[in-house]
Length: 285
Image 1 (cartoon, one colour):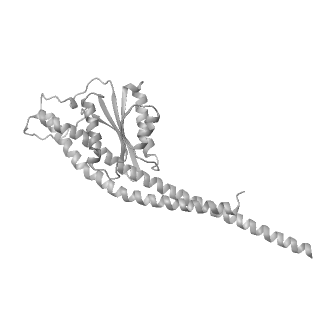
Image 2 (cartoon, one colour):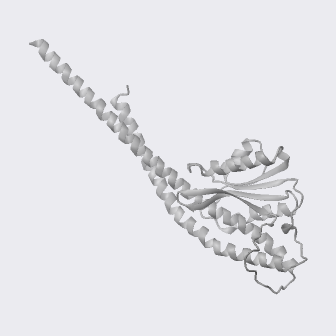
């Protein structure tokens, strides 16, 4: 049975832990507010650029851009977004599991796919597994700007154009709410999934449609990656806030149980001392 001192030590250490997790929860909540705002403010831009790209691509009959054409798939690229550190619940493991399952389903050799990892956790995991991680980015800020991801997004699009892989899939956590983040798989390249069901706008092209698409399509693909990163960052802060709140609640419950245990042990010790005193007094009579 643990001594009173041991129980008191555990209570003290657990209280310190709960203070840390509570502080981390508050920090993540503060970051979440801004990250959620960034993700939502980017949606109108994404909707507009998709509308323009779809209208230009649909209105430029006979124009064939390599980014709009499917080709025989010899190699697949996977771009996944994770965090640089843990303590975020299942945020990282859900994305890693989704990518791992997809690789097992589609490929039988490491030569058939390549991985681009945004975030230290995902990059370290797949490197340790011996998978083909061709690019990785760590140290992205909590509130990333497009400049922070432009190089890797440009490189990911460029490798598709250079036929380093024949298709590119994006895996990230889509932010639904502070308590729900859904793992999302999105095909980035080739751009064969443009929605043409809506109303298309007619444009007069200056310069030619070919030149416009050569500039616009890479920007659109890069915007898809940046939008997913903003979404992923909001999900990360929400997941970490929830995880730290749960840790704080668990610490409080543990403190309550330890306090009860301490009081019972203390009462038992007092009762034992009284019994010994009464027994000694009776022996002297």
